[in-house]
Length: 195
Image (cartoon, rainbow, N blue to C red; front, top):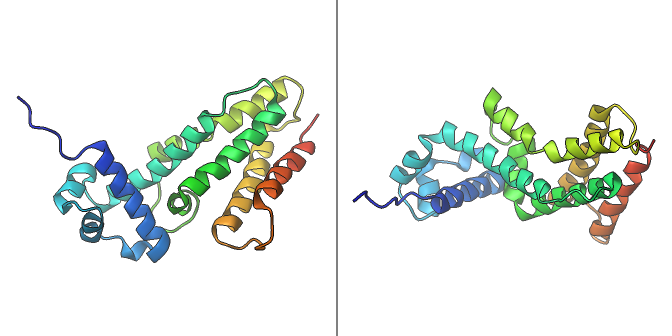
């Protein structure tokens, strides 16, 4: 009979979440495998068993962050209306950032000095944004959006990323209705991309 697996996916996720929390609240220097194991109520052996070491842990944290974003974006079922689908993707992007704020800087900031994703990790990260590219191309093919698709994708990402970054860092006015302002910004941005 095989030995039961003690270092399961639930522990892996708990360790990744705690690593992201340490980095986002205390900085990358606070991330030590001993502290991480202690905070997650496990052993350093478990951390090494699951990740192999700190560089692999950081890479896995980067991939986990993009995987969660990608799952949220893929959960937006295309409606056949590319304009509405773009807004829904933008809302899902914000929802993902608010659900996992401790992972947001890992994806888009340079919060981990010296970390550069390898080609495979970079490709997996870009794959998370495939729903955005798919909706843009569907909209161009349907004559709803103008080309070039890459420019539209970058502009739409800039809007959502900028607003979400301001929100997460607490740099929006306290009396701002963030949710409605965010959605209005998404909709107004699309006007410039209509054919």
